[in-house]
Image 1 (tube, rainbow, N blue to C red):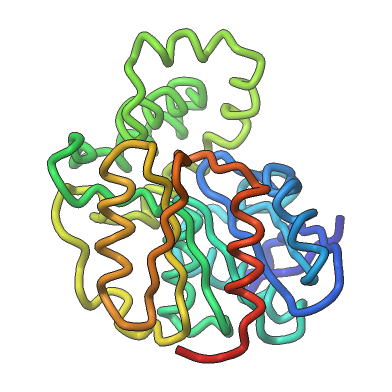
Image 2 (cartoon, one colour):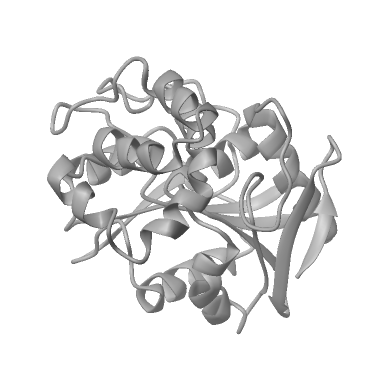
Length: 267
């Protein structure tokens, strides 16, 4: 493990393995760098792979006030450490962060995404209008378990009785450990979980090749959102993974990513 310092001085913890073109993996809600280890190991056969703890998680630091731009700068610091340019893969809300970073000018040559959790239709309820505010209040109270539970019910759509059972499981403590950053993911998503179509101009400045992946066995809104994103511009391409849900097997994901990220042609 090593650290790089973001523009505001926050230390960002990362690990590097492999050799070849640089690839940075951006995790979604609850994820730390360890959650990407299996995928990183497979990609390290072809690339120099960077996994990192997003700010506020794991061994990384944080700042008193959150702004999406700070997370973009965290990614920029890693890209600079990687040599000044990188290929990037983002998972779930990390996909939206990665997409936002490219839109804001991060030095990314190719971008791969898996199931950005957009809600653009009526197949499931949209997020409550006060979702981020309520999450923020719970975190400020130190009610990390309640914050995680609220995320699971309101954002993921897990029934409350199922979440009650999850709170007794061994993995729940890990979710509580990163629940303080759930409002960050909410800020990154913005209004893209409102049940309305994606904004046509939010990512207009993204001109690099973009691969948008989704499974076809999960909640219908995931594939719908991926299709909408891929339809925004000619440089976006959809790849559907048969039989996969939001948690995808690394051994199925890695070959598709490797093939896309290894290509140097521009769209």
